[in-house]
Amino acid sequence: MEAVPKQPLLGHQPGLEGLRGLAIVPVVFFHVFDRHPKGGWLGVDLFFVLSGFLITTLLLEEHERHGTISLRAFYLRRALRLLPALWAMLAVTVTALAAAGMLGSAEASGAIAGFTYTSNFAGEFGVDLSYFRHLWSLAIEEQFYFAWPLLLILSLRHLKVRTVAILTCCLVVSVTLVRAVAFLDMRFDSILIGCAASLALCLEPQIRRVATTPGVFFAAVGVLLFLGLTVGWTGRESGLFVLISASFSLAAAVVVVGALDGTGGALLRLARRLLTVTPLLFVGRISYALYLWHLPIQGLVNESSLPATMGTQPSRLLIVILSVAVATCSYFFVEKPFLRQKRRLARTPSI
Image (cartoon, rainbow, N blue to C red; front, side):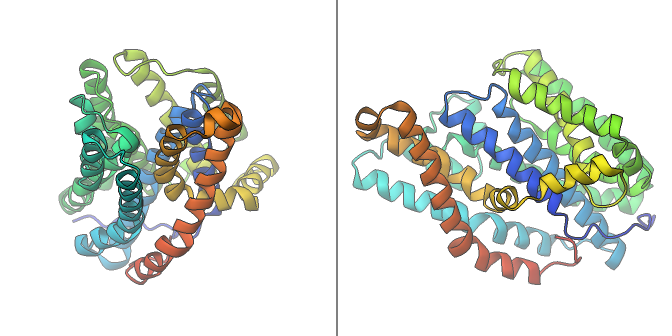
């Protein structure tokens, strides 16, 4: 068994919290404001890259500090982070739909698929998931993390870290090609790109210097802005869809590494300060709840008489306001108590 190369702990990275805020805003606007910005759907890829990078880094740190990775602790931390807010949203939304006489087979199917983390498979088979169709991304993440820690443990036990990093990169290419050929919206490759970035940074810390070179970092930012603002939904039955998603994810990985505290000149420090302004950090903290709630709230508002009474644009603004308000309540009253328990189970100081 090869020891993971010595590296500084990741620690708390407020810039990554800001990136979460930047990821959720275009996703919400894309859904609420009739696919504007055009590339708002790519915000999910940024979430995937962030998730792969953070979780892999934490697992590597745990392996370095303890010589092992506790699967039990990992899965319990994931449950404490994800399940309370998800179950609360499902319970409240299903109850509201039932009370309004709007709980049909599509809504029930969507709730069951969301509860069992199978929304992606149900969507692929054409099941109408109604208010819960956005839960496909949570299903993809949890299916991935059911296997990834175990694969990482076995790999670190029998292979050199460099080999693990190379194999992860090969897996990225393979999954991307399968997506392109089979037209599947299973964006495991976006998560894997984040995992590969973490392994590469662990193996070669100087990679951070490359990512924080102004030309490289701001070129990656330019790619994110261009694709996020101009490239509309192409339909997943297209190789272009996969190319755009993969290109965005690769640029996102550079930005994630560049957003870490540490090296970089004045421009990088300014970029990090912009990522840590208070409103953006707040949106980043409530981003999970905001993602969970915005589509059910949109559906309930649109099914009411409000759009006809208020007009289309005011009703859309109301959806955003209600979503932020409910997500804030979810964060403070549902998620935060369980997050405290989650931190007690942490085997590394990084969060």
